[in-house]
Image 1 (spheres, rainbow, N blue to C red):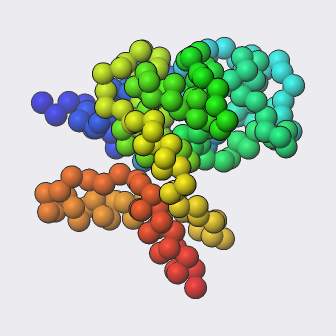
Image 2 (image 1 turned 120 degrees about the vertical axis):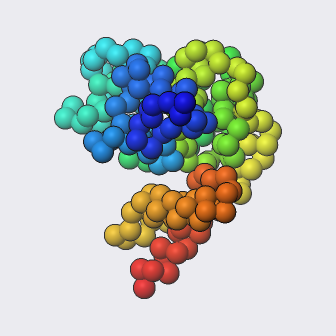
Length: 238
């Protein structure tokens, strides 16, 4: 039996199905209004903290001194406040949270290590100890390639599921490999009036439709795909 789809775009056979199903059952995510989850879409810092704090503590405690870019009217105000109280989130040197920035492995690892009290050995680089600690408990999915890689919704779901349930028997990334690749990631600039995430999604769909016709396994978002989508968008703007 093929089973019931978890979301319209997440089949039971999806490699992250157990994790995504777990978050849905826990009401951490309801998906999008069209019934989809968009597993390959990247995730913002605000979205990440909302998912993390809803899973760990669904209370609506908003008694905190917010960061400059976190306002009481914001939908992410309460979870960010709670995360600040628990010292999971700290503002940057500029006193900002940067809610709209996309979460990288470096960001996520530090917050997750604090949230789940994973034993971290401090290093010169602010993220290295957390990445090594999470890799040691098999919490980083094997398709996460580099320190500054932008995580997808599926990858975040996988990390939360593993840490919340002490799952240590899944394929995992190697810390040394991830850390050594940190300088190889493509740093893209924004292109005015272009939704790069949508371009990446459409590009990935087009490639995977072609691969499916040839009986090949689908690709996932990776640095080469991001670079190709960006270059295509940069040329198309002219």
